[in-house]
Image 1 (cartoon, one colour):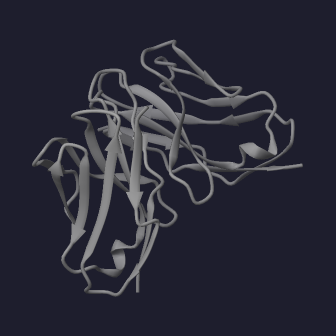
Image 2: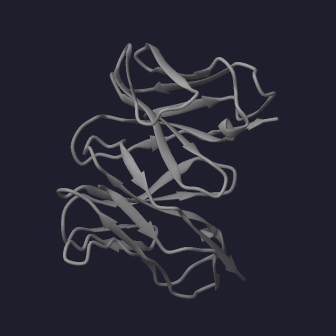
Amino acid sequence: GNSVTQMEGPVTLSEEAFLTINCTYTATGYPSLFWYVQYPGEGLQLLLKATKADDKGSNKGFEATYRKETTSFHLEKGSVQVSDSAVYFCALDYYNQGGKLIFGQGTELSVKP
Amino acid sequence: SQTIHQWPATLVQPVGSPLSLECTVEGTSNPNLYWYRQAAGRGLQLLFYSVGIGQISSEVPQNLSASRPQDRQFILSSKKLLLSDSGFYLCAWSVGAENTEAFFGQGTRLTVV
């Protein structure tokens, strides 16, 4: 079946530190992959996506590359800010219609000044 | 531009009471619509999706039901709430095409007491 496994949190970093949040998936076929971010008390916002192998999604300094050989989609950012504190969800679209998503458990990131 | 509205933002309901959560989308026609639930300490789970008026598919067996009386309106209901229905409910929409993404509302936090 389809599944997403995400690095457990919480992750605490100092401002300007390097961030990696690991995400691996199991899927039939080649689903689109996403990172969503949830700020406290809010809904989910799309952070970035990749629709095929070797695609790199990027937004707001965050990047993730769709690696078919390792079935991974790790999220990275070179220098985090306090405003990046949030919960990050990795997800795959198992129906390729945009909204039937399987999510990882979420990783809480806290960035300290 | 497209927007998605969910209400209410928070709700406290007694066990055994009915539930109605509403979601509307503006700025698009014939969207795919979705209800997700985020239980405490857990990831998001797809509950229902709809590809058109009156067309509802349930992803998991449960105490809840969904309806789509109009093209851009999606309602989540229950006749009698259980304690286990507590959680954060998110509505989402997508255009229903390949390689697209879902857009989420701000969510409703439901506490059943």
